[in-house]
Amino acid sequence: MKRRSFIQKSSGAALGLSLLPNILMQEAEYSIAELMGKAPIELYGKDINLRKEAHDAFLDMKKAAYSDGIDLKIVSSFRDFSRQEGIFERKYITYTDEGMEPMAAIEKIIEYSTIPGTSRHHWGTDADIIDGYRNVEGDVLDPEKYGNGGPYEDFKLWMDENSETYGYHLVYTDDPKRRGFKYEPWHYSYAPLSIPMLEAYRGFNVIALLEKEEFFGAEHFTRAFLRSYIQNNILDINRSLL
Image (tube, rainbow, N blue to C red; front, side, top):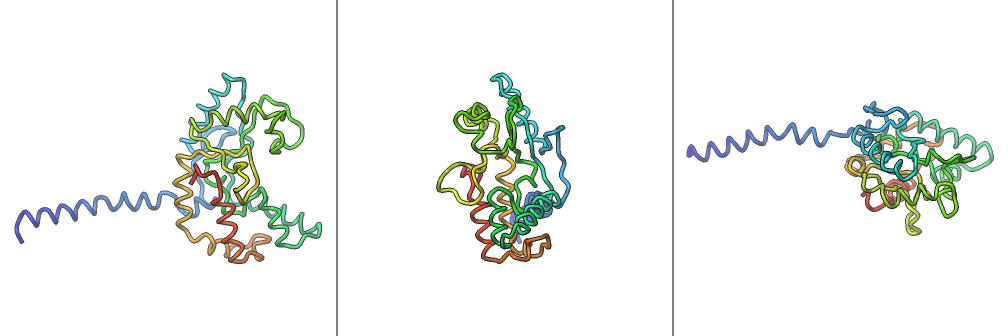
């Protein structure tokens, strides 16, 4: 072998080996345990609880909103698997105790709540946001309160105009063609992180993993139901987040 050829091939092999750890690190950046809310992640900010980059962007957005008379307040952000499991099971037990059939109860739950292990709130990138200046009675996460004449109308208009400047996108829009979860005018996602996380999530066999779960109601999941749920509820979101 000629010396130049040997050097080129040796250098190429060395380069490949030097890049391998970086490639593996990139591929393993988000583990399935992390994406399903089963592994601890580093969160930042009192009453914010988001990943560092999402936290910093939220504070920048909050500061800008202040100048326009709006106090961006997070009412829910990170939720681990156990907490989502508790939400799902509580609703499942309530609905079935009221006489609903198991699958009917599950379909009712997934109008607004996710199956444990599939929530975007597991990622530390998503938050339910309201205007803290408004004194609102009852459920603050009511879509009607964000529409014309509602107490959060100004908040929604401000977010429509400004949130994407800070990387935050509405997840479940009011597009009539969108399927899955109902319209949530309070749920925003920090796109620079959540887009690659969703891409990583899609690379795992989530259906097989969910079939192994044992929380109340999971025994009624069929493969067809889970396929439909992932396609409609997990993936039929604001196109800017895909």
